[in-house]
Length: 217
Image 1 (cartoon, rainbow, N blue to C red):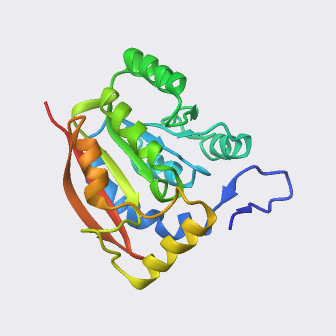
Image 2 (cartoon, helix red, strand yellow; image 1 turned 135 degrees about the vertical axis):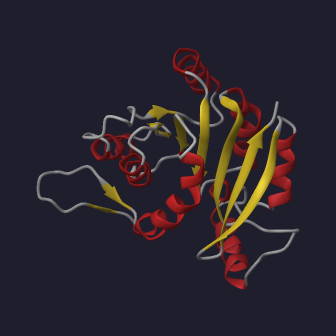
């Protein structure tokens, strides 16, 4: 569930309670990567709650949020980042849209490749084609030695890590047959094809994982 901030002034900022709960843990996991970064791309930024926290903590890093063409989410991101000079305006980016990736390519040609790309809580609520599109495109905008970091719930070695995750998967598939928890090995195999190698699997609270992929030479 999401709620608009109740300021009485038409504040467009959206608050996702789960983002409030997990943003500190995610920041802690990302901090070692941000400390070495100049440019960071966040995919599927949602409300903007995460990126604003990162930018406040790392004022010398330039952050680029992105989201699908959803007016409410884009307005929320813009409202959150309004006072922060190191966050760029949100990019409109659908992972399966070639034209959107072309715009990202234009951006990196002008400003440089990204050192870190992050995406959280998407793959299990998206068709497998989204994973394939990410594997096809991400390496073209990520610097050599850069990392792609995934956060979310996954299966591991073909198995659910908890009974609650198995129940969650069943609920997702009941809503959409193309959704569901992905297996870490399956995701890693697709990214490996484009030179992104899984280097770290980190356990996170609430039965989630952080996966860190690194781009080689």
